[in-house]
Image (cartoon, rainbow, N blue to C red):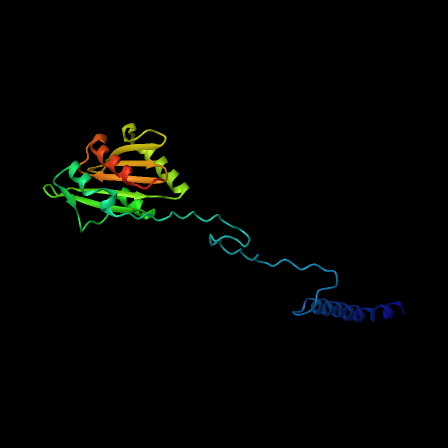
Length: 210
């Protein structure tokens, strides 16, 4: 009797195991809701963050660069015909002049005016450019000149006038800072600081009071 009572239990155990497995599979089936209060399972492959674009994030602000006010002046007002003749009788206007020097182009990029005069005998060009950069740009230009060029106190009395001279390739280049003005005088005809002194003095005297 005991043996016959035990045999029926085996099918019951198998049926219970099958029912339990079916219930477990049903719990893992796609679309089945998570149990209340359960946690979301981690994904097998974490989502990679998007690469940075270098653009400011929302709420991030940058101070805009202060624009330089434009400065315009006629070439015969920047340096009068009489002053040009006093510098060299062979020098006259250069109607087809286009800024070429890197230093002069930097002044033009700062909103300035550039003029050129031509030595009718040698073909040498004298470039003069003047700008009134924004405060930060003016300070940066003056700092760059001071670090690269020779200080020339004869161009004016510091700190009202800060003058510098150096070589730019084959050309001599004078850079002067006076008030709000940045002045560049450059030419292959300028070999030493004194060669540009007369031109610098004339230009500074012709500029409107800053």
